[in-house]
Length: 374
Image 1 (cartoon, one colour):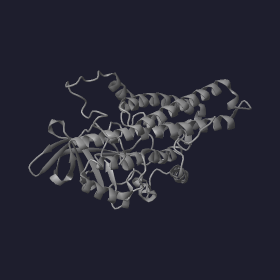
Image 2 (image 1 turned 90 degrees about the horizontal axis):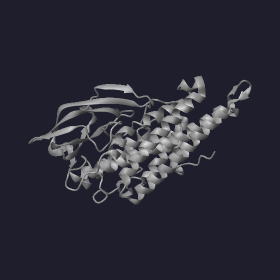
Image 3 (image 1 turned 45 degrees about the vertical axis):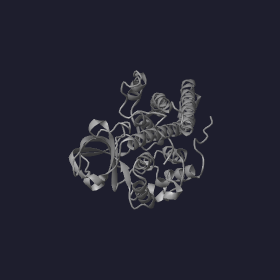
């Protein structure tokens, strides 16, 4: 079996070393994302960043996923910078620079289980400001944030983006998710904010939300495929080392066949991911459909492999001290990140809107949406 890196390079090596050193950590005393400089990965050099691409950030995601480490890299290093791009150049530049310097930690107030381009917060505009209402469930709060980016819909469905101090948003509930993240639910009840908190609205926000959603789906898929690769490797090692009736489990034909099936599913998932990244980088018109199809396929394969690995590990498969168990939990949870397979399947089966007959709240249009990085 061959397991070549998905996104090889120095970023992958650095992320892998960090993940190996913190493989069992659930809480961090400091902000590793800021210390490692990952928040600057997709920020242009003229803004103080690295000037990297989404594939560069995927290297970080791969390194962390391979060792089961949970950090909000997708949220803080991709979604937040992409949403900030919707603001006017001066405003976006100031906050992106603060993000890279570490003077501000900006996170999106978006649900892990919902598409980024479908805001759940409603905004009402008044003479001197805005009023926000709505519930956002399952926000990643693994690392503390100084500011939150809040996507919302104004009257008439116009999207807007608000930047708020984290002190103004207290979680209604906090918990740990099944894969080890720290999650929280936020409930906004007629929260009044000044007019200056709205940093962008209209078409710019619409495009930024679509780009952020594309990036979230791609990076989550990279996370899934990387975790799947390591899960297969861990399962093969376990079957070779563990003995029953005096012989290694790897000699049992049924287990060999099941492991082979997992490996074939991994290869198929890897192929889907590579194709999706190629479409993303080339600005393909059918990217939205490709990402939805990839999400549905990966969700099924990931769940099947996770369940198989747990069964083949026996009693060890239910112990979170075992890396394979943590990877299996990660794979099952990934199915529900940024829309589960049923949600995306429903979108795929829905009739396509006719010209002039209305559209989705935030449609994907190759003619109007630029899919370049920040």
